[in-house]
Image (cartoon, rainbow, N blue to C red; front, side):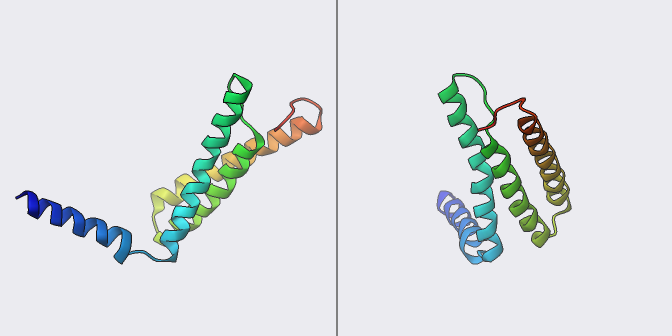
Amino acid sequence: MLIDLAQSVGGYLHDVFFVRLDWWVVLGFVAQVSFTMRFVVQWIASERAGHSVVPMAFWWFSIGGGLLLLAYAISRRDPVFIIGQAFGVFVYMRNLYFVLRDRDKGGMTAM
């Protein structure tokens, strides 16, 4: 029974990670890494500052990763993923607009 389970799981993983691997999946992985980097830069900036900080790079990684994930979702024809990423990219762009506007007015200093 355990051998059958291991073979089933192994077959599933082989199918998902090798058989179905195409350029869209590679783009999806690149997009996910880019999107994840926003949390890494935010974490590092906050650790350095000793308090919560949202650096400019957070918004740029959010927009870049979100657009790549949106392209991936469109290629996969996933309506839930498409709506979620499209809305997210809109929010990230709007937040970046506010940061840039406030910085230009001399309000906040952005990293």
